[in-house]
Length: 84
Image 1 (cartoon, helix red, strand yellow):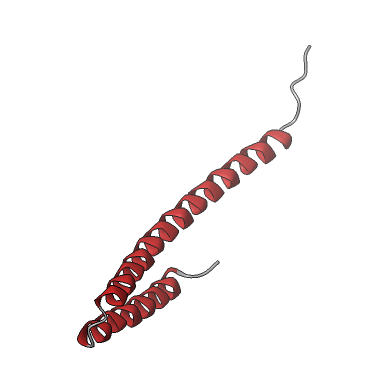
Image 2 (cartoon, rainbow, N blue to C red; image 1 turned 90 degrees about the vertical axis):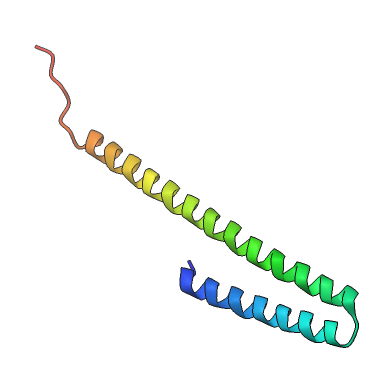
């Protein structure tokens, strides 16, 4: 699993590169392509937030599964009840 800092760094690098392209393309008059790069930068940021949320949900589900497994183990290791 990748770390939060690594994915943030890669996202910042990608967005920075795309925004640099936006500025440079706008300076030479290619406004359509500047807009495409700006939209791609926005999608990169949105994708990163979606990725973070999905990883947080997976971590929570993993903790919940671990609690369930521990409760099942505890149940299996308890001695059976005797009927007298």
